[in-house]
Length: 155
Image (cartoon, rainbow, N blue to C red):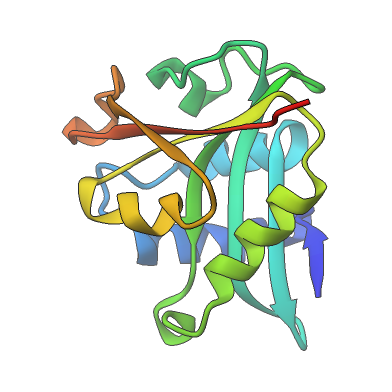
């Protein structure tokens, strides 16, 4: 079942975030709290167990900036959705759950487009959904080299 996260999910999504990302890249507890309360947080669960989730925020900025990870430029109904994480607990990886959440997001999205950054090895994964690699991102989040990818809604 797909649903939006609420504050009762915070402890569990924080544990999953720490499992999925190295310490220098993982979102803090407070950042995840802000995303649940003010941003975007779609999750897939079965029998009250989280299988995968996508989190981020809406903005009117067209490109993802490092300041966004802490909530700057967040606009409740912004034109662009900035994706900060696609998380799947280890025991649920390689079952298609991340793809299911991504497809649900794209199917229901109503803005100008979706922007994310990813490591080079994940470019093919996001390309399968129609995201286009725009090259190296200006983001240096976690001291990592990121590629910015965009899914633009054609109207």
